Picture 1: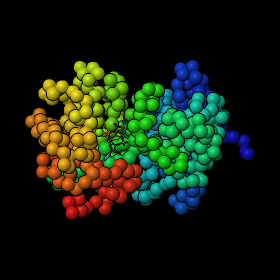
Picture 2: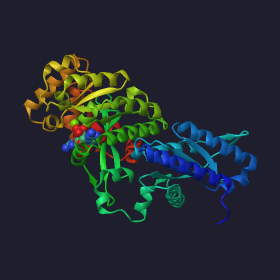
Picture 3: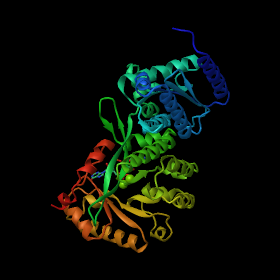
Picture 4: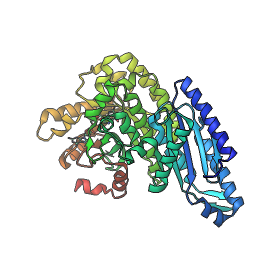
Length: 427
Ligand code: C2E
Ligand code: MG
Ligand code: MG
């Protein structure tokens, strides 16, 4: 190995200082290394001046999308390094890395010529992955090497451990690591406008996808997250992921809405407002396209505080849906004051409505009452054409259920939208 350049030495010195401060302040620090794949080929094709201008633009774009970065600089000819010295939510690092990747891959116009690049990104965190500047650099470089080898847009250090088969079964059982290792996913279940039969959005439903491909239902792990205090981070992750994926759909000409489930704990958390507000700003999703679903039973705990938080959230322009309606025994008097936009009729009424006159009467009543108070109605658990047509005739606004589509991965949802045929639903 040759003598390290002065720039490299001064960067390591800076990283050391940042680590000392992070340790003193009990903060998480992230080191991100970006390498431009095939930079030497680009330089040969476009010339030295153009490739230098390209790196300057990359630095500008990285600084613009990582406003919290304390350092964004170049090391060597084809690498950028970024230090984030106060990472509030380490589980969101994959999203930050994706954001850098997205910012750097849109085309550059340099002296009239268009250029595109493919960056590889490696990320490591202090104190999670290493506790000295040199060790952190080595971890981030190792992640970068995997990103370069596998064509993955980015690799966070823990993922590189997983790739090295060092993941223990203890870690597999741990939600924290599941988030780090990209095992938590959002699945999407389309919501159909029952008048036009067109999809207008989807409900985002969490899945824990184990390395063997099996998925775990949120009914199993959400209570675990709630009791272990991890729900705030999961909610934050779900909101950011759903918005990022909706913005990706919009860029393909499909501006659809998304509903994200929010646990009672999160509704009572005063920080949720800031989380939603900043996620809207980060992703640039228009607020009307986001709905938060809360269960009817959330209201019962402390309805004044809950109403206050819901009203503040609605002031951002987002919608609130009351999930599993009909099961929580909330007082009908709430109807006149509830800060919500949508009622979701619980699937237990919908699934059995064929041949069950009592369920039909309850659904009619909920639709009528909701409409009288200016609320829209979504029926969940539609499993047959007959139920779909009956709900349509009853004036229900939206529907979701296995008859139209099961919850699916984002990539499958994209394909489903592309091949959707409304006419086939009523055939
Ligand atoms: P939910 O919000 O009421 O979601 C609807 C559930 O019904 C989903 O189960 C969905 O897969 C299922 N479902 C949809 N259509 C049908 C149908 O036609 N027939 C039947 N039998 N079931 C149908 P899933 O995904 O297992 O979610 C269960 C619950 O877990 C959700 O109920 C929600 O309360 C909670 N949950 C899901 N994702 C999240 C999340 O990101 N955060 C929080 N806090 N809770 C979540
Ligand atoms: Mg829901
Ligand atoms: Mg529900």
